[in-house]
Image (cartoon, rainbow, N blue to C red):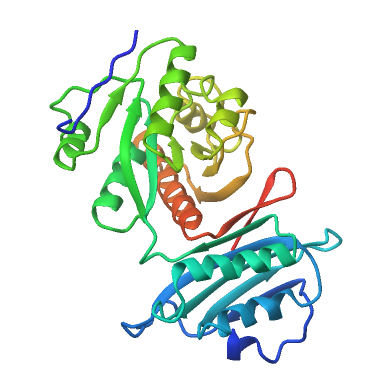
Amino acid sequence: MFLARTASQDLPKKLTGIANRSFKSLKIQGDSVDSSIPSSLTHGIHVFHCPDAVGIVAKLSECIASRGGNILGADVFVPEKKHVFYSRSEFIFDPAKWSRLQMEEDFLKLSTTFNAMKSVVRVPDQDPKYKIAVLVSKQEHCLVDLLHQWQDGRLPVDITSVISNHDRAPNTHVFRFLQRHGIPYHYVHAGNKIIKLYLLEYLFLNQIFLLIALLLTFSEVLSGDFLKKYGKDIINIHHGLLPSFKGGSPSRQAFDAGVKLIGATSHFVTEELDAGPIIEQMVERVSHRDNLQSFVQKSENLEKQCLSKAIKSYCELRVLPYQENKTVVF
């Protein structure tokens, strides 16, 4: 059975002196990105992942400088003995002198020159926000936090929908919030095959760029076959209670065991449950002074902070794949 309920009515100067070679690691800070930028100038971000070679940094700088741009900061990482190069550059430019289309062409030439595996440019003021959908079950703390951050403009995404296997009544806090802001709420209750087909169709039709999974009960749905067909990234958040406790009521189990350290992990979803490349992790100490309520509250706060930071890092192009199951996070 499937039901859908909707809550809406339907370096130039900074890098000139650097030799034409790559670096094991490099971080160059220019003017603060948060400092005032003249109204005629716009902020851009570029990330690059390619085989290591001589002169990459110089060519990146030349590409931006040749169009009148100025690098505000650059991060470079070249892992030892891996022969790969990673970089993330933030720059300002005049859109009247460097069009968005020309920028894509210029960075594409660089990508071709260095046989890049990944080359992405983003201009936050010009490009649309990332469209995301949120998968959620009964627990709402992460969802509520995301919605409030989105409402306050602190989350650089467009939340297009919330999809859940838990039916929420129209008089609940979350449902009323979604209704006020025109965000559709979809309740799905069916076999895994039907849910997969529904999700894939919905995600493709609505061009969802990023899926946020806040629940384990969809783990069978997010299978290898589903991941291949969807073809885009999915970020998951889960508790990291140390030592690990599985099954029902993990917080109660950890509390009863008297753990002294709790945590949360945000990672990309892969076919293997909770084993995808890690984006962000946070930990906090607990003690004998904590009761179950404060213990759970600390755990949930960590999950909210960890997920929020992971999404922001992803949208700011700070996350790059590294080896088979790791990430570079600038």
